[in-house]
Length: 68
Image (cartoon, rainbow, N blue to C red; front, side):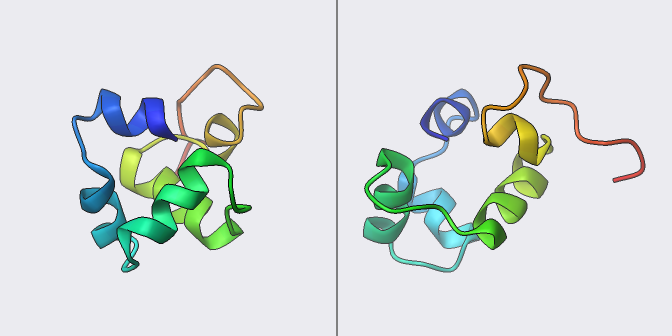
């Protein structure tokens, strides 16, 4: 998540605002201190226009599924 955020020139605060949470909560997800909930993965995939599999490290192809 960190690499994707940095590739889009966003701060942790920027992404936390999109997710409607405090930066400290997002930081814990990004650092792996806390498990990232499915709704956060889904919202980040939509925000960055990538697949959830890409966010989860299951594929190197960031393309979202067709029709999304």
